[in-house]
Image (tube, rainbow, N blue to C red):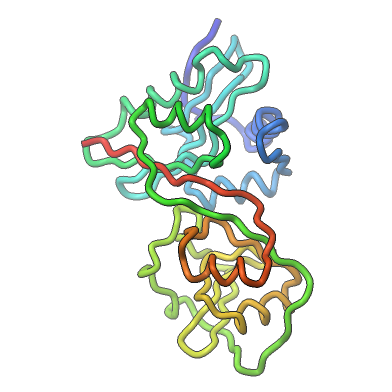
Amino acid sequence: MITYSNLTGLSISYLKNIFNEAFSDYTIPMQLDEKQIRAHLESNDFDPKLSIGCFDSDKIVGFVFVGHRDNRLYDAGTAVIKEYRRNGIAREMLEKIIAKMDKSDEFILECISTNSRALKLYESLGFKRKRHFVCFKLSNGGQLSNDVSLGSRSDITKSYNPSWQNEKVEANAIIFKHGDNILCVRPEGSVYFSDPDLVLINHALKQIGKLSFTNIVSNSELAGLLYKIDAAVLAEQEEMSYENN
């Protein structure tokens, strides 16, 4: 019997297992360990009460992980395991989330640009495309510069209109500064924000060994610089928004 419920009371280990099963054959296959799924959920302000799962008896077969900040909701992962797809489960889960939104709420998500089936689903529900994102990766190379110093959280501004994943600067962030420009990066190399400054990028790359740039606006100066230095393109995504007004 198919039922729907929020995700309160489910362990990180349980959520990890269903996440990995559902995303194992995704456009970009994802397999996260327990530490990684915990970090993913925490960094996106996961709210199990707003999230939803589809259950067949006591087995979860689909889910939408929802993050929550102020009057904004964020889709931190939607998936249905393979044998239950094409049955309208994803639509049903999203409709249930939308039905509970307040009038001032906004629901944000990203969708891989080549995933035409998912894009059609989101658009049919009323989501509109806002920005086109590119995800890049750099490894090896780089050079240290005496002109780069360590900055502080006060050097970061929100004027650059970051994506959901890049707007929350965590306590362990490393902040490099070159003149008035900054680069903010997690210790494992995931960049929150960087001004289009090659000196900063090279310095951070040399120190950390690899850098990944998630959800960079495709027509931005930073994207132009990353294309110019032949950074590897991992994916392109559409930022989409449902506004309940």
